[in-house]
Image (cartoon, rainbow, N blue to C red):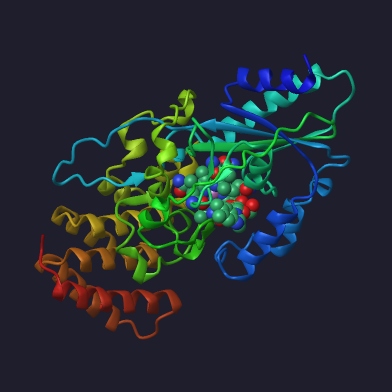
Length: 392
Ligand code: B12
């Protein structure tokens, strides 16, 4: 048995669904594409994505001395859990599937380390190896495409035949020559379902995602205000978004993920009750989401996102919990602004009265800082919106 076949056996044994190998030549095409996406503003809002980082992420020899081969690993996290029946008075939000279970960074790092250690043991000679799990500077999808782990979908996801795109990728870079696999050479053909399904139009062309328009970007990475013109398109997403994957025909034939730790333990992990999120303080948030990828958006981000979802669900029972946030002066200005917007969307007398008293309270403040001024204009806009809404 060759070292490459032994490696594949090892990685499958640790639960990976796809294991492929690529040579470690510089990722020249990916570098060109990524530089051009950055220059066109499609990666705005993620200040850590710089031209320097792109150069590093596409030059394997700078990532590992003597780099020869990439091992591209993919694992499915597709879990089946239907939303609980909707109960009036208990509106729920939606979390993207990859964040239903334990934080994939921890789970996959452990598994990838085990593969690396077993590979090192299986090698006759000393091996230098470096692992990459999402946050490290490596163009992981470009490696996966070269290795034939999958092909680039028009939604920019790596699509693996039979496994789909509800997969997470990790990579091991080694200074050992392994037998490379070929790219799949497949494409999505004429299918454009993901492009049509994106509620905000963030897939601006096949394979081009505009992050500043993407629900996933805003609900996970944006630390400030969500653009007013996009909020009503977010539906009930409160962390990440799967719309461009749910409609993909390749996912209809996909296997289910086998790793229990990546699945939802309970309904609230996938479809949290939104009023409960509004009532959480920072400490409760940390306790509830310890060990989950959801911590990335932080307490402020999740409550902000929950306000947007409530404005879209428009359940009148949300007016009370939203007013509690609005009228609490110790609540963060970003959260209060989004609570105001949600009240404006829901409308009705109680919401309007609450917004009017918030507006009066703002008028009494003699000098507003930037956050305060932002909040003041959100309250006025919400009041105008509330006056035109019919309570549903
Ligand atoms: C930044 C980032 C994001 C950003 C930007 C995503 C983007 N599309 O650019 C945001 C926050 C929006 C995001 C969202 C998500 N992400 Co993310 N993200 C990353 C991260 C950290 C870097 C990606 C990056 O550099 N993007 C810049 C773009 C230019 O490069 P690229 O994504 O590699 O895209 C390639 C294609 O565009 C392709 N391409 C170029 N031209 C063409 C032309 C055609 C026709 C086609 C089809 C393709 C194509 O070339 C590019 C370069 O190789 C990677 C991890 C990593 N280290 O790579 C995870 C990663 C890409 N994310 C992942 C996941 C799971 C998600 C979400 C599904 C989470 C969710 N449910 O909300 C969404 C999916 C949104 C989407 N459709 O991409 C997985 C994807 C796994 C897979 N099977 O593809 C990764 C690989 C993390 C991991 N380790 O598993 N993410």
